[in-house]
Length: 407
Image (cartoon, rainbow, N blue to C red):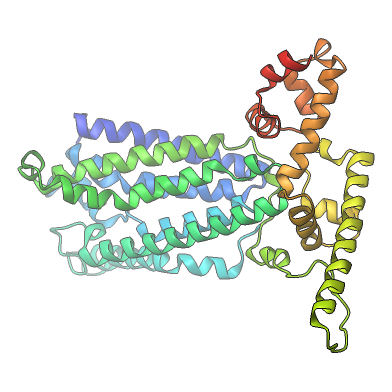
């Protein structure tokens, strides 16, 4: 039987092929660059592409009874919703930590999905090779769309979506503490990925709402469901394009683990020695405050010295951990000093040095020798958008306006 190229089947076929191509390219890049995140996203896209196969082939006329095509579709598990959630969650973990490798405990997430695949193989062996008739399958409906399996998939996807969002929120907190390239490290793509995945999750609800309208309600269930799978294909295609192009950030610098947040939650800048009880509580408070202020001033002086002498801000991928190693201390101390002493987070603190360096070069006429963007890159910025945003935040003017006024 030939593939019936109708409107519904052809549209799904176009997205199916493109998604598979992106899955292959991500796998290839993942193997070449040893990127676990690319491999996981490629696997996600492959599973998502298989997800639309039943409806694509159904509208192509392959579900007609008593045909070999129908037998293949019934006995082949194309819908793997129990794998989609784990792939999403582990993708979030690996893209925020370039060196993260899947451990034995990570594979436990895939057990439900693997069990369904094993069960599907058992069904084929029993029905086709042993009893040679419909036995474990009823022969009237595709097991991929049994109610129990559909409900289990939705529960799994919602749970992993929530876990992924919570993990990403922890990561964003870490970025604000640790990175001098926070705009890039925030991975807006990942945020969009989670939003898109959320859309996929609520699409069935949208389908139920559409069925309240006469136009959709009058159509048979199979036709109504096409809108959901078409929407699913569009969202996955969006994920494929953006996921493949999300290579502009310094991924190798991203080494997030939730436990790292604990190092920024230490309450004291320096541990004050335990003092014996004194009767004058007010005097004790003032004495402690003076010691803390003195320590704060000392650390501020150390940070300013190393930033100005070594020009660390010129490193576009500077992190708080790198700076702490330079000063032989830990990130929690520096985080507290920068927040309390300079009233800035680490990203804004470093960007202020970069903006000052840019303005110094502009006053010296360096713009006659190279472009403004080239100057910004020399001073540690890694993108035009980040430079423009930081420049206006500090000076209140755009770079062009500042140059017109000051040069």
